[in-house]
Amino acid sequence: MPTAPLPRQYSVAVVGVAVVTDSTSSLAAGLADRAGITVIALQVVIDGDSRQENEVDPALVAAALRDGRQVSTSRPAPEAFGQAYEALAGSGYEAIVSVHLSATMSGTVQAAELAARSAKLPVTVVDSQTLGMATGFAAISGADAARSGRSAVEVTALIRARASGSVTYFCVDSLGYLQRGGRIVPGAAAAAAPLAAKSLLTVANGQIRPYERTRTASAAAARLEELSLAALGAGGDSVVDIAVHHFDAAKEAADLASRLSGRTSGEVVNSQLSAVLGAHVGPGTIGVVISPRPRGSLSS
Image 1 (spheres, one colour):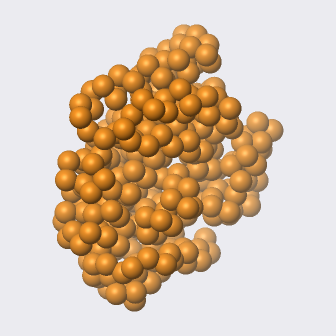
Image 2 (tube, one colour; image 1 turned 30 degrees about the vertical axis):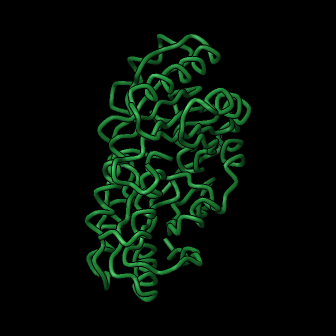
Image 3 (tube, one colour; image 1 turned 90 degrees about the horizontal axis):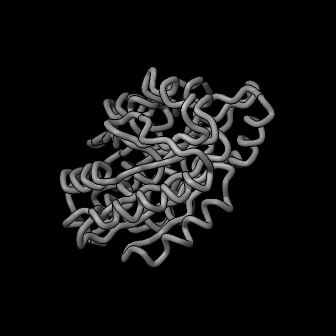
């Protein structure tokens, strides 16, 4: 695979610790820019044509899947991480915390670890054991802490705390995409599929697992709202952010985000899933990430 070009570097003040994540965190470009987070892109391959996912319109990936074309994904090359780490070292950073989607779902963590071994500065690689904005929110908390002058150990602890404290639920139109990509616990899809038109899933211990079943799309959306509100209640007096994710289901996501808006003291973000995640869950997916801000974070 050819070496990916250097990720775009953002014009933020250099501090001691840099935060790196990958494109499956589904951070909007403007959000990553404001937070000063370096984003490494995974690859989407459509009919043998490989491109960085941040250069691919997710709608094109959804259309390719619906048309039955060959769609696959691949992790970044270790060289992409190595180049990014070298650039950050050259910018004056003293350490890097690099947080990525679950290692059970992708080789991205392993690629980052390979690059970290030869980096010119200390690199801590964190397996978030989750995906989407559950990883993205964790990266944001880490970047906030880094800008305040926290150490790499403190930044790492906040990232781990936020990732582990986040809850993810999502509903897919079909389990077939997850089955073909091996991204669901073995045997789980076979048990869930015959019993429901819509399968609600969650992420636990780094794996996608069935949560419960609903009969219709409207029932699934209503259940996602109920689960979000229940998780908000369980958050106590913590500030809780919510991301409403979708892949080729913009209207449904907008409706759900509107209903959840104002129900939390944190932010409600309507975030399209990255093209790579979308390729594995399939068109029509909608989901929620409920992410309490950890104690000790600047934004809590």
